[in-house]
Length: 617
Image (tube, one colour):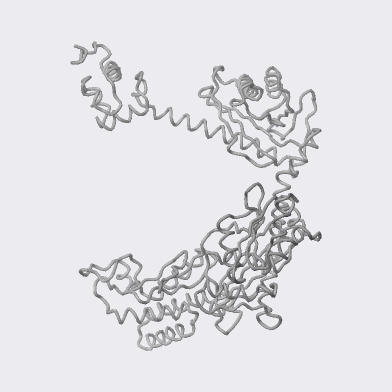
């Protein structure tokens, strides 16, 4: 520890507050403590740290503290500081999306129901959710619009004068309040049924529809009965998509955490009106060995930063001294009653176990996905290095391809893979300048000569990084030409060719090709590089062809670039009008000079002399 740290540690007070750990003036961690003196000293005097804490402590060269009156104040301050500075060693949720809600404001005239991304803090509207995604919300909205004829337009009521109702009124999907087809009381009765439906009281709605269906059937109104039957089926289908887990009508957020020694995975289950309406998982990298209660506590703070808590929040465990402060903070965030529970038995305990099961499954899937990704990238590069007999595993692999149409508009592509993953920002196109006709060998020679001259350039602003391995699309002949071009520049980088017929790998100074198993990640990596180089070259070549086919006759005029061409066409509206204009008229568009106008006039009248303008006289 430096002298600054030692001095500050000696002066730490016995008070609640927040501390900010720093490295070179930058805040790398924010924490809160009931007793700053004991908590901050434990980082520097304790030895049984987890790897994450030990790594953080090794970077700390200074810290600041902010004193608070209560633990709740410290908790709120910690939240704000994390949001403001986003320190590296704090838990930071990468998922910044706003989960969708269904919004309905019963206090406005003729309200409508629609999707909303967040809840307004001082809003009197009713919100239902959050839903796990917009698709789930649209499913509910589609069902609502089939059942309840509420308006979907953006009209602001009351209207100055009645309007003609839209097609939704004609097909029975709207009561037509814009045209005075219903009273506000009639409309409000439908709104009450919508609120009941969204609150989970399906039985009331289905009972009413079933009674209406039977009445219509008894009155021989079979078409109306069929429509009601279809509505009943839609409601029952929506009910079946939501798994019932309780009958108490609870509104709960259930949290759980799973750790594997390296990373953590937090899980949230959403329960509304006693039914599970969705869930979500959040990866927590580097949190695999930290205290589960503290990790979950920090996660909940981040999670509710821009979300409203449910009436009841369930957790499997939390440090006892902070549970009360967290509950008070949740009440403050919700603006009303909110209970934090750590159940030990019963139905609520079963919910936390279900959330833990989901967290474990999400973590296993994430690890499996990471393993597959590793095998396709870094693992494939390591296998390729072994197959080619390379001493070092290549970091930067470049692939090249040539594209032309019977020797016209020849272009080349360079694609770059870093550690087995494509790096599109490093891709480059080349226009072939010195080769005429369809000569892929000479074209590749030119491209590689230009590329490696950039790699060994003395000018650091022009120098490109040297590749660790180069892939040439072709057999031994193409490889020989490419390698000679590279060696002539003074560079010497491992290079190999890939022949398309049998996917044979050719190495310099070796006659027999290497044949890899078609299921190996190394061959799949090579194929991806080759195909990406081919795609990149073809795309560029196609763009050049399209640009040439849409060639403007004005492009043949010396001194008339894109801006002047655009100005001429905008001013004269057609090429014919440009041909008929005088020199004085051609000077009127923005950016046109006398010299440029004379050039255009000479192009339009090649057999005539340019008439003298008033200025030249």
